[in-house]
Length: 135
Image 1: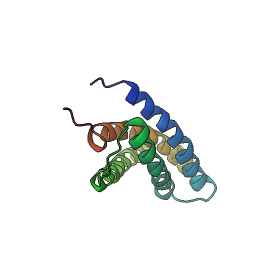
Image 2 (image 1 turned 180 degrees about the horizontal axis):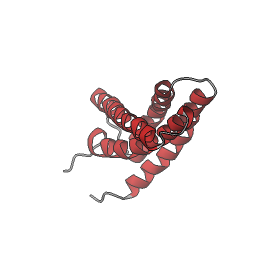
Image 3 (image 1 turned 30 degrees about the horizontal axis):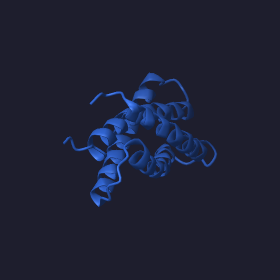
Image 4 (image 1 turned 135 degrees about the vertical axis):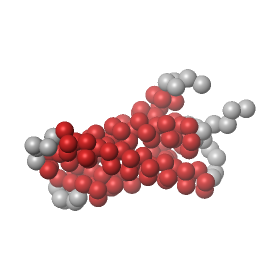
């Protein structure tokens, strides 16, 4: 199995849709509704994860299996990736941009968190959640 193949391309396309929807929600929540960093970024992943699950399950990984265990794996994967990515991004950006305003730090941290999340989530979905059994 190649690491970069048509599945990777499909995952990227689904990611573009998720990014447009989720990022819009996240930055609207943070900048217009003045929700906190964690509420704003979590809103992104709650909404984006629903879209991601459906599109990746049926389009990217072409998995028609009906499995509650798969949904649980997906939720655990998303949760771990989210906490790891955003937990690393915020202190990292705060350290690098210590002189910047809190708003700039947190907006940039959300962007960095998104990037980290995408990488972690891809590997989790491909090799754990929607892993195809090798026959």
